[in-house]
Structure formats: C-alpha cells, structure tokens
View 1 (tube, rainbow, N blue to C red):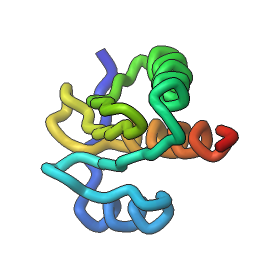
View 2: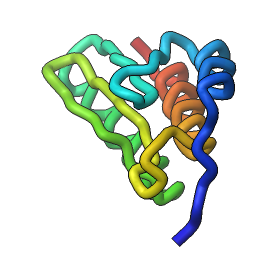
View 3: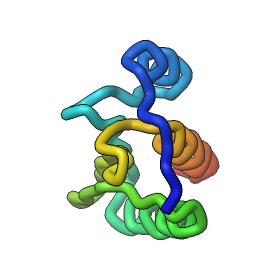
Length: 100
C-alpha cells in the first residue's frame, strides 16, 4: 500500500488556483461537469474510468442526465493528497479534449 502525504490547506488553495473551476466541498476536491446530453456525459465517465484505473485512484462521482459531479479524496489517508490533484488535472485535460 502506498502512502501519500496529506496536503496542507495552503497547498490545496494553491492547487485550486491552478485548477479550472474546482472547489473544496466537504473536504474533497470537487467539480460539476456539464455536457450536451447523457451519452456525452457517459462517454466522459468511461474515459475518466480508464485514467483512474491506470492511476489506481478512483473518484467519487454521480451522473444525472448531462451532468457529472466528481469528488476526489484519498480515502486511505483521510484527506486530499497530490494524487487527487494529479487526477483532477488529468480529468480536466480529458474534459477539454471533448468536442461539444
């Protein structure tokens, strides 16, 4: 089992400043993504699932029609770690590559 260092509040705020529209919600990195329809939202989730599986770090998420809410926290460390920031950046890149 790998161990990640929990980020300080200052480190989290710094990273939030670099992430597009991500916020801190219930002590997790959080973002609501919007799509043109359900199929596109599901495609995004499928692509993110591949990224998450490759990183062995899985998001908390929910989908309602054309919206996907993603929350990131490292459960084993009980806080936000660099792993969450790295996954958020990869998710953001995947979102920006999508065609609307």
